[in-house]
Every structure is written in structure tokens, then in C-alpha cells.
Amino acid sequence: MGNILLVILIIAAVIGAVVALIRGIIAFLQATEADLKGVGPSASGVKQNKMMMARVGFQAIAVLLVALLMLLNR
Image (tube, rainbow, N blue to C red; front, side):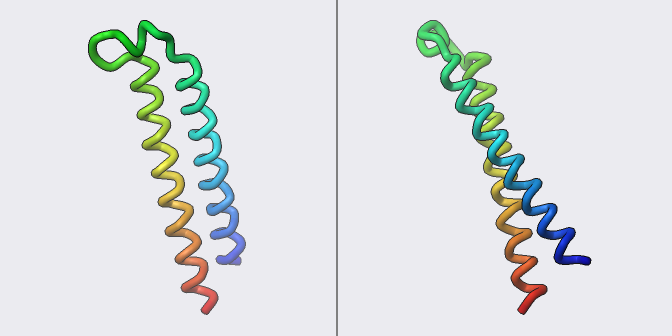
């Protein structure tokens, strides 16, 4: 039962990472030339950074859960 829960959590973390990656790519593609030449961080740049940090967080959670699953199934 515990393994099934861990696998479900791993799948959820992977889906979260993929969604954050796609949202970050969309924000990157929507950046305009004015955003790139403007002073200070643009709204697009802030969203790209937030999505990158979310993706890294989801990936870290997935890696930790996989390590936990491997430790429990030695």
C-alpha cells in the first residue's frame, strides 16, 4: 500500500514538473522585444523565473520520492 502511494506521489510530482516546464516555455515565447529591452524585470521574465523555480522544486520532490521508494524496497 505504501509503495502505491509513493508511486502516485512521484507521478504527481512529474506531472507538476511538466506543467511548470510548459508554462515557462509559453511565458518565454510570449516575451516581446519591449520586455527584453525594458528597465527592470518584466512580467514575462518574472513568470519565467517562477515557473523555473516550480519545475526545479517538483523535480527535487520527485527525485527524493524515488530515492525513498528505492530505500523502502531494498
